Image (cartoon, rainbow, N blue to C red; front, side, top):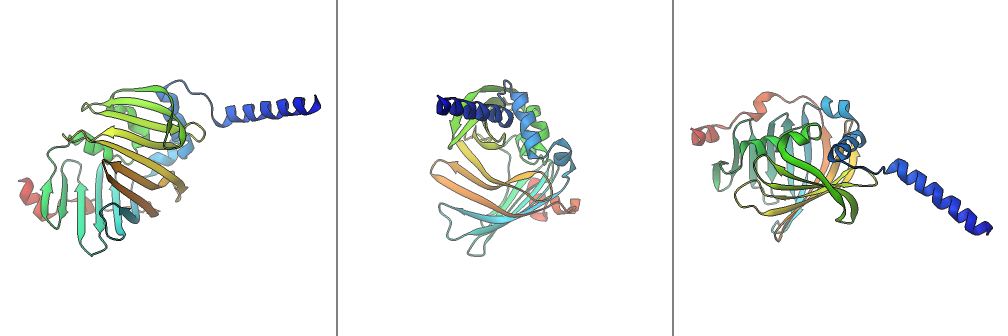
Length: 244
């Protein structure tokens, strides 16, 4: 009886602790509020006005590791990739025009809605998520990539299905499953892992993207919040010419 009673007390204590660590949430707003809190809080997220990330990329079809550097300010981005063979790819968004330069040439993205590109360049996206949705609701608790997660199901303003999964225990974003924002409607799964702090909010340092039989893993090695000049995000001459 004493052992049974002791076991009951221990289990009761664990249940109380679990309730404190992983409260039962009943709305999308509650899940998102908890997510902001565990990242470091609204003030810490809002404080980030510039971000420079350096890291590596591995995946199907790539020979060796590629390296990348990504520069971000609110609604502006520049992403530079150097492949193992030395070839380079650059992509950017200046707040209005989304573009890329590859060994095959220059292109301007006219297929993806600008609001979708702006969302991807929203450096404080955690503060603004509902702004991009016609509907975003708590759809239940499900298993996602080995995590027990709150499932948020939504439809973006541009009509795409979007699913977000937040770990019940930690409150952190475990991943996404969504329709591609361009006309292809390809289903993409993104998994976020290995959260760390670099002097600001927590950052998922490992991001795995699966689309069809293609897999890419991005590993962030360093994150800096030093100011970045707006000139970094100006359209390159070749893009200006094509855009005209």
